[in-house]
View 1 (cartoon, rainbow, N blue to C red):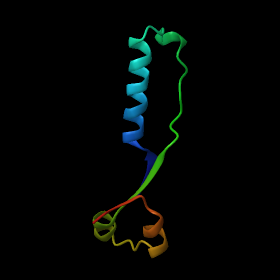
View 2: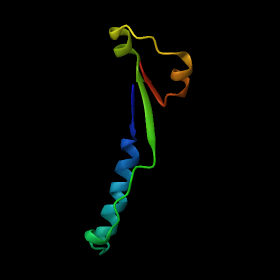
View 3: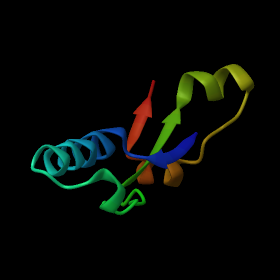
View 4: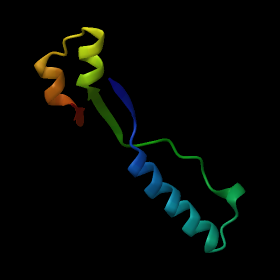
Length: 67
């Protein structure tokens, strides 16, 4: 299982920062932002290898299930 920042969302935020810099904003004046979108991913193959059973409720709440 993994719970962390969405990489796709982070890439979009990076593009917005690049746009601001290219538009003339000074990088030192831009705020540091925290991730706002998180993903929960379950890897069933790894769980099976470890002999761990993942409850159905957890699989339903996952954003992505790797089989």
